Image (tube, rainbow, N blue to C red; front, side, top):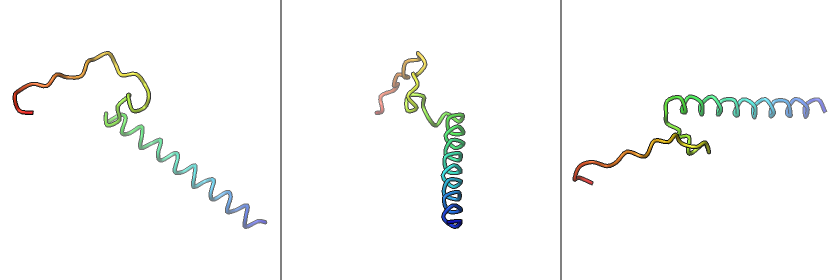
Length: 57
């Protein structure tokens, strides 16, 4: 029984570690502007998308 409890505790700690790391990475990417609010489900600010300029497409 003791071995099973240790395995459960270790699995729980591993899962918590992964979720904490994912949260840290997501926040870092958000700060760098690599994740748009649109992808996170939050409304985008009222700025319209930039217009394309020039003749080369």
